[in-house]
Amino acid sequence: MTPSPSHVSLLLRLRVRRLSTSGSVVQSGVLETADGSYLEHLSLFYGGCGERATRLYQFLHTLGNLTYLNCTDFCNNHMIDIVARTCDHLHCIDLRGCYDVNDDGVLRLCGLEDGLRDIIEVLSKGGRLQPSSRCSRSLKEIKFSMTKVTEAGVAVILLVLTNIEILRVPDIKMEKVFKFLQTLDHKNVQCNLKEFHSREILNEFQLTVLTSLCPNLEYIQVSFIGNSEMDLSRLQQLTRLQKLRRAKFADVNCDALVWFLEQVGGRMTHLFLYTYHTRFAQQKLSITRNHLQCLAQYCPSLESLCLDGYLLGEDIPYHLAPENIQYFKTLRTLQVASMKLSEDDLKVFLNKCQNMRILELVLQNPHVLYDRLICQLLDAGVWENLVKIRVLNSPITSKVMTRLVTECPHLQEVGCLYTWLVSKEQVSEFKEKIRHQNFDIEIY
Image (cartoon, rainbow, N blue to C red; front, side, top):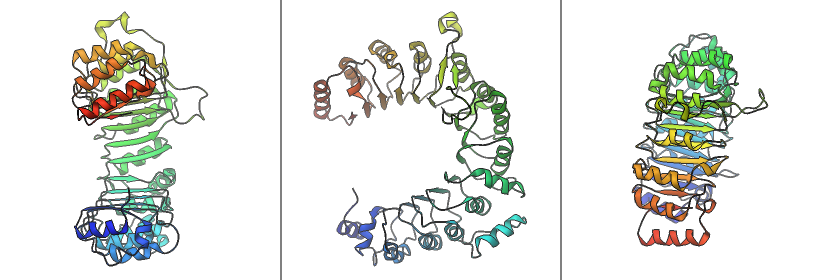
């Protein structure tokens, strides 16, 4: 709940380090003469219409120790200018739905005085521009969602703010940015960037520019087309990223993926595979048990795996060669959605993972996870560190529900009980029992 004006005034007098407030509180005028010099984390929500932001300008000038700024529908270019000139320690700026922020705000964040056209002209001729804003050295994360920042603004960020580690601007077309960067000496310009996020389908050329511009990426999100040959040629470009640890791939062909993981899987810790685009195929992309076996074999350090929307193809069953089965052993998080799995598939994922923390299953055949299998996992002691279990529509009874809470001492979240073989009365009684035992567990 957002605090009232009187609460905000009290919090600032108490010199709190974190504050979340709304446009209505700003409109009250409580911040106009307030001192925010002790604030490190500021969240602003819903500025609304009118000139509410002007009542905030003087307050922003006092935020010398601010490290994190989060604005939802409450920010403009002048606010960014004040923050850029004031906040020597700013680590992250996160803007969402701030349509009064455009490329001019990017220039002010960089501390550049010339107009966008002149700056792009300098950059296109190979010129190097140094940021002069007070926040430019400390700024590591830039997240702009639903703003009016364009591809030109993103190009300026990439070429001028070379200390950033995370950049998220999902509303722009990276194809245009890469086309512009192609004409420049862009190699190793963004050596500090650790994460690249895009839902676009990028071709070999664009991925070549990306890996040359940002050679030290640790995380990448990108889409493919599901064709083995074309996806393979694109994944080949990503093998150049020697520090890559985490990947989020949409519509990747699993034959091509297996080749990629054979090259780099030894260092992968997080893998998110999902189906997104449908323009190139009328049916779902498939993943086979052989593919899953390769994932387990080639990714011995995998901590987090998410599979969403793939069609599990029928190939050789596990029981034909039980001595050769590859198990996942290091998973801490497993999320599977919109897929059909067998009980044996679940055992490959779960039986050997001694440090499983989060399990989320939304299966098309939810009956494969049931009392006996869960009891086997509990008896084996592999769920002692379980923190969250979220399973939909599985035939799990109240007896196993009780075992989960009793034998998983770190458990904090259990759901969705109303879709299990548990009555509303049993759920209510269970919640009451948990409350009396002072267990801090969310039950839903």
